[in-house]
Length: 435
Image (cartoon, rainbow, N blue to C red):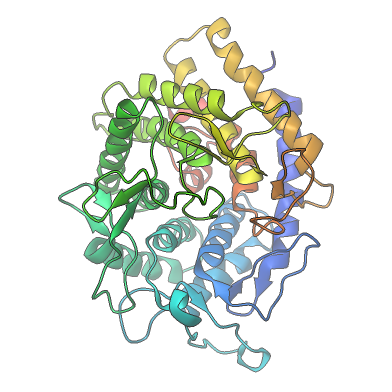
């Protein structure tokens, strides 16, 4: 079984990375980055999402650190859009959704207009993507990124981070007068990624400690739920198994167990442990055992369970399939999780015999992507049905390149550092040097 670092495999990953980054340029629009449809076009009449703008800003910050021409100005465009178009001029924070910026406004730093009720909401999920983007951009020559990061940290600490509980809050009304009576593990998973990036960018260990507190809670939930991390909790953090019952296809808060997020928890547990050790902090107790159990349970629940290749989107609390659509982002999370586990196991002296089942899954999953998802022009099919045919039931097209870029880089970078910091510090293709 070949390893991740074979010359041919690394070259294959690099070639696809360049193609994907070129495809992602389609999203560049006035006021941020738009939603890419399956034909590569972007409807400039649609409202502009903070989520997608922040994620594309992050990706082109990473690409600029890789030295890919054209990436720095796209990163700067994203930072400017977040700083001006999405910033709420009357209250703290940033709008989640703004009306499109018109042609005559493109040369000025136009203040955006929130698009409806959703636009006025202050989103925890979007806040994490913003933090991650600002942290990554702060490592580039974009001078305004450092100020954006300072602003974002201030808002995160004032409203979203709950120091007493060690988790992040959910969404707020525009003026932060009222918080949604719901808590989700999705927002906390995204917060872990953001906190690791902020910790590396600022060299402040408290962000690593905060990420560790979040994953410790996720580990506790996994132990109590047969190695499945549940998604939904009420306003008092009581598990709500009936939340959105009957809607397993909800794109943001589906009923049941979110398969992609469980793979994400497996990976984040390992990465937080590595970051903790690198910073002289105690990693979460028994972290590698828990990460493996979550991964093994999730793979068993979701991979090739209906006679066809692919990974389900959601399963119920006993692991039975709910939503059989295959989403590319879910499989990219699975691949990143298996990479993190293999690196951690190798560091602890695991034999090739012990690693082989994970390596086999890794290459089988890349084969699936190559066969059904990856197109020659850099477009990755975002959604397939149970017969592995392109579909758009939930997510038409492929909104952005956030997940495809991350999975193409994952085998080439260490667990102990966030992606932008690892690249900035010269660890690309030397992942074990940083462990």
